[in-house]
Image (cartoon, rainbow, N blue to C red; front, top):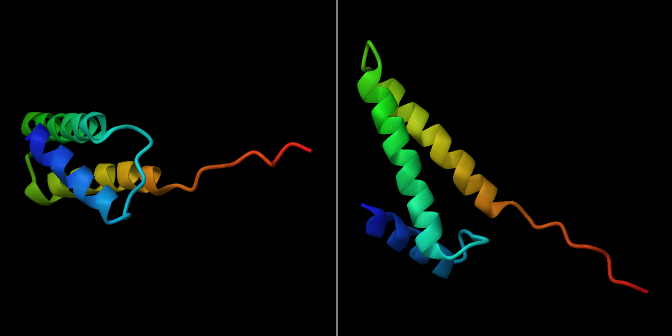
Length: 79
């Protein structure tokens, strides 16, 4: 699953949909970690509602992806 996440990161970066500040392997590992945390949270919930679990995972992934797309702040050129 980590390899799948990494491949998705590489493909999105190649299409210039994201601009990850780290290598794809590291970003793929982060995405997998997020997935497994949300999956464990969902499994341990007293009422395991699929919609809630998927919504939480989608929200968390959107936060990560939007963070990867954030424009970088550049320092003004030195005089």
